[in-house]
Image (cartoon, rainbow, N blue to C red; front, side):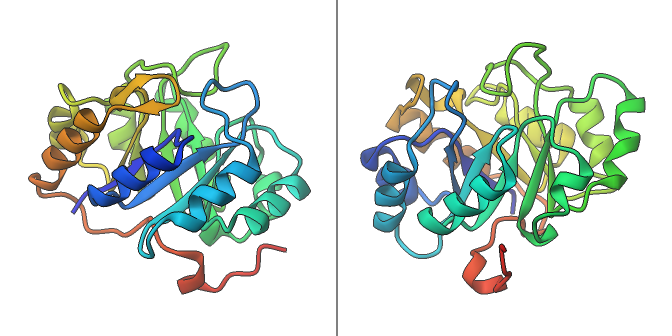
Length: 223
């Protein structure tokens, strides 16, 4: 089954409804320049209200590693998604089992460096020279399919109810990451769009690799 992460959660209402729809993971963006930024204090309140079984993912962009670790513990996050220019050396400051590294490849040569990253999964997003994700633009599905040959793959970038079936049929990702495609405005989810896209994904046979898992079940030490 293809796993589903809805990212850019900022409100209790959106988290509650999305969880009820059967999502596998929720994403919380701690990048202050994002229109979907959520303060750690608010994220903690939302996470404490989420039923057990939902994986909580923190999205960070070029943060200081110590700050990331503090937010992970404060909010009770399960996984860390690095969506900036973080190096393999930076990633080695965390347990590989907790890390998702986002990439926006533009050509096959860009995939060579992936082997240097100690991570749980690779997320492929659309390339934008000025923004770290959340653009609503489609990623390169051909390159994403190549990533899947070497890493557990999360497909992101412009996914919505109109193209999600085609994306899964072409790329066969282990998971999909959906953000702007289910919004009424940046940072607010549209219940009908959320419900519809989850229903579509659940009706498609997908890969069985489990990416989204609670940290309590893995017991890794973040320090």
